[in-house]
Amino acid sequence: MVRKLNPKGTEPVNPQFHDEFVALVALFYSGELTDEEWGLLQIHLAFCDECRERFEQYKHVNSRVIPEMAASAGSEVDDLPWESESAVADAERRLMAQLDDRPQAKAR
Image (cartoon, rainbow, N blue to C red; front, side):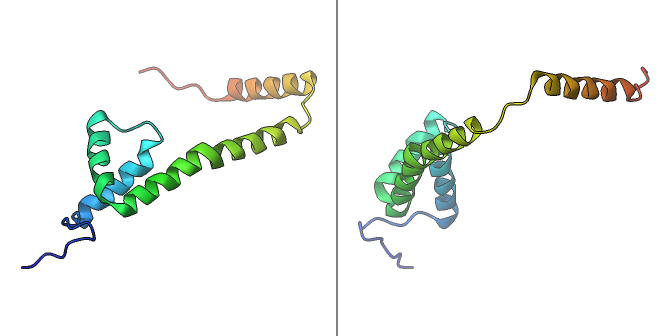
């Protein structure tokens, strides 16, 4: 059986394993990768153009898009009217009354 080589002259990664690397790329910016996973991903990125491109896309999203969205959402929240202290106190009293009215679980 003759294996088709990728443009770099190396064998392509098994598609099943490739999907795992795609997931690792997505998890990298969440800080959830172990040192071992990060090491394996770095090796894979050296040979896989597709994952390297995805890695750069996630980098852009994390460094530019998310901060812009957060800033926009923050300004929207700042524009909302604040509830009066009495409205908050009334809501708290209603909540506590509902909690007091719940049936208590019997001890075994």
